[in-house]
Image 1: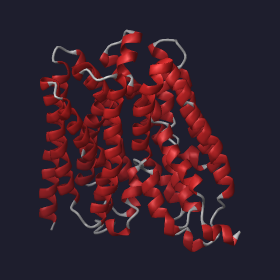
Image 2 (image 1 turned 180 degrees about the vertical axis):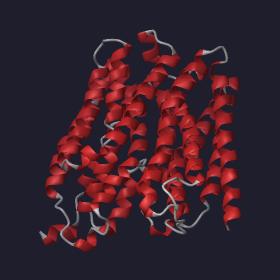
Image 3 (image 1 turned 90 degrees about the vertical axis):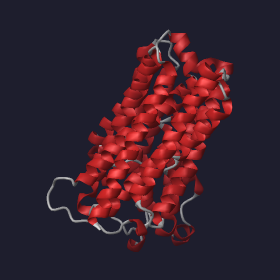
Length: 427
């Protein structure tokens, strides 16, 4: 037993943790990658297609808010099984030719599958992974969402070319099922830590962190980020928390409006193939993984949260301008640049939000404060796709949609300026 603990848990456990975070989003990213085919085959509008993402994120938000206590009372093995079964079930339902309403149900189930991974994977890290490895593992497993975006955006169009988009979903459903089997083995051979020093954080904190976005754990991994906590005199949140929640909401609108409709935009406006359209989202996802790690490191080194948020907002504005320019000019290079800017900026915001929050809120209020900011982000995630769908379906089309996205990011920049000024006054 001691030899096994010294050697530490296997890499298969890390694969399972990353897979648990990324399994739920597979459906939405996959459907987005083949959105043109879905819209044509089902005879739905772009706005209706946006409802799929709204249903997914609304269910994820409700699940995170209501199922945390339930998850506390169940084992790691059972919760991981639920995550993978729900993810697979959503993908299997897509394969049933029952119309748009079945896709809505599938999207909702995939949203519920995103309700458990944060809490259970954090708890597994605390209870089974030595502290010396924990920080690195947190950073890797929290990139599961962007890994899911990368994988689904590449594989769905390729499989759809051979088996149709319903067949692609059925084949992809094998992935969470395989991960489920791997989780049974990995958890069985990764024993609970027996050294109290290695479990320096009580498992209750893992349950509380479930209220936060996945990046919460990444942001809080480096002790250097938790500095200058400001006591909260009452149960009311300070204005900074509401400002960060508003920033998360606005950025969330832009993030998912872009994520969901980028492949469709490339196919409809620039004449990309379905496969190449999926590659645009894959590029954004790959860059987003690197961006989250990079911006987290900057925050750990003491960078100013509001200043980083301002920089990210301005880069996101430039990205929206590139999307607009690509649609007007038809220049493909502008689209690739826009995808890269989107991945660099908007996809990296949440880790900065959580880092900034942890610097200003004491641990006693962290769960509720981070939950507030996360609620803002999920609200934006739910609103963005349906709003973009309505804009794309209007006479203004994608051009109007990218203009609105750019304006939203400008509002994010203004909020960042307000936070910078507030920080100066507090010095």
